[in-house]
Image (cartoon, rainbow, N blue to C red; front, side, top):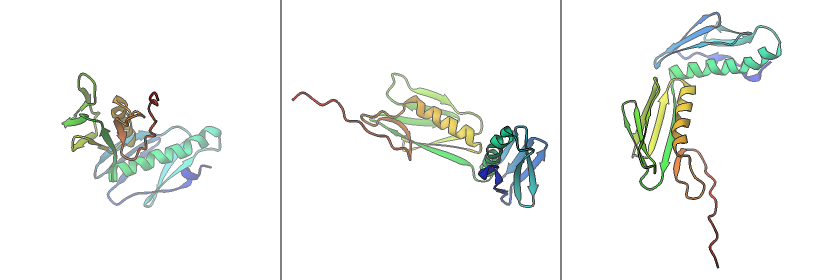
Length: 179
């Protein structure tokens, strides 16, 4: 049995969960999310907790147990608190602008890179170099932040590029000059 899958998921005060077979709908103050669980896994609400269990002891059921519990826990956390990823832009002349659902990046290419954010994702830019991606769906927020970072990943010689705020970029020494 999965160690993660065994843990019950506590439901915050303003969050409600609706379970219909394999379909789960979670509603909270920030919005609502829906998910179809994989087979061989079932979800029950026991008081103020949600418990994920396996239908049998097969290998596929055990594999999906912890995954399903984590997906449901992320849904509950997303509709109650939300998720955010912070990116930092480093480099001379590198900057970002957010206008509604569009993000414009000037990161050393001949033309600015324009990106349209998916539904449910908000983007804020502070000081032209700090980008905050936020939303209620953890997967979409993470993928959007990774897509923004992929426009200009940090390079190891000067450290220029887009990186996560808590990311460490190992620096390399350049060429040793002639002596």
